[in-house]
Length: 201
Image (tube, rainbow, N blue to C red; front, side, top):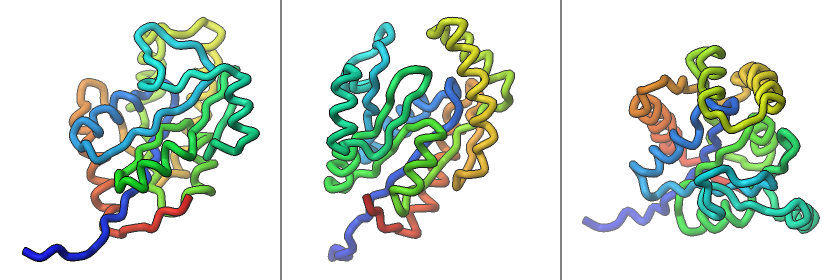
């Protein structure tokens, strides 16, 4: 069979949702099923949590290093969240796209709104909990925050849930049913791929 000559167009998929909804777990499962997906690692100034690895979970930077990258315009988007900075490096996205890989970006709702203005042709998916009570239970079980930070996260999560309408699709991340969540996300991605949007960054 002769090659079609058509060049594969890589996609940018932005996955967002409230803190604690399970974005990392869902993204890891998606990448596990498709090695052509590239998960962009976010840079942050927050402290590492137990078990986290620099360059795998996040790029852990000092505040001074982060500020230098802001001045150099190295970020596609960045924001201060709960007193720490988080940012998406342009190079992380550009290198993957040039290699023909689909790119998955995990950002908060504020970051997704910024990226919507900067990345033409990206697919935006909101990961939602079955209910706000379910989300609060997940956040408490994670036990990674002080009471003060937890209260801030809960308030912000309620606000973020109201931004669901800004996304192309919303997928409910049911507890103990990861396969169904991943299948739903894959379905939206595969349907969107048929439009072959041109990504511009």
